[in-house]
Image 1 (cartoon, each protein chain N blue to C red):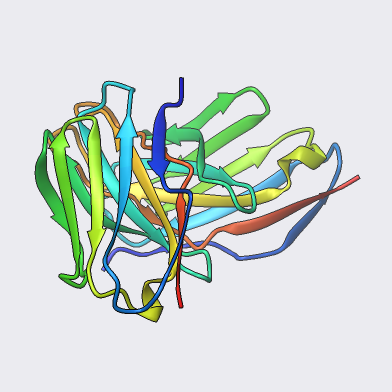
Image 2 (tube, each protein chain N blue to C red; image 1 turned 180 degrees about the vertical axis):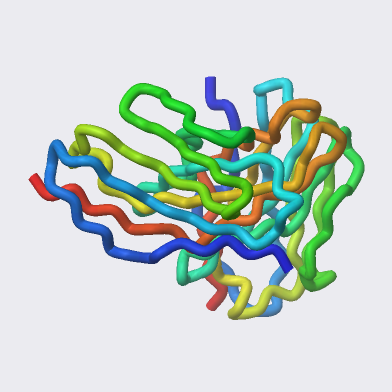
Amino acid sequence: DTAVSQTPKYLVTQMGNDKSIKCEQNLGHDTMYWYKQDSKKFLKIMFSYNNKELIINETVPNRFSPKSPDKAHLNLHINSLELGDSAVYFCASSLSGGYNEQFFGPGTRLTVL
Amino acid sequence: QKEVEQNSGPLSVPEGAIASLNCTYSDRGSQSFFWYRQYSGKSPELIMFIYSNGDKEDGRFTAQLNKASQYVSLLIRDSQPSDSATYLCAVTSYSGGGADGLTFGKGTHLIIQP
């Protein structure tokens, strides 16, 4: 009965590789987000999708590409991984039309070696 | 550039006392204000949100908002050791039409001393 789930929980990979992180929510929300939390614990919005449509695309390298096959899923694909991509990536979801309370997934800790 | 400022702490409070956490924000267009709690190695957990001036109480937690001063606070009454965590203040300009992301502060590390 997990509300927002992410896979994998941990991801260790070499520089230059391509990897994906998956996110699913079963809350019936129509908006999903990706956030990055860096080593100093600062949490920053990367993308948001509303009804499968990209709404926000903050200043993020184009090596990062979100994909939303349906309202319940938002995946993050990262090409040509760099050392600076090491962080914890959180998926979140909310219901549009409300006050934008966002609920977070457990996070994916990405380590680029 | 939207900014949210918090004192990083650590803020040390004796068990049973009131913990007071503060946050200021730069964007006057901000509409909704949130407090998240994050334990080490865990995801942010929503504690409270507030969108109108004044106080909002939920159990041991009270959120206070002053839009004129661009100031949000969180009071935790009867602090417990389990309240020890990092508290993140977040704001959004969302007003019912889109999907604005949250702008987070860097968090205040709260330690409740038994």
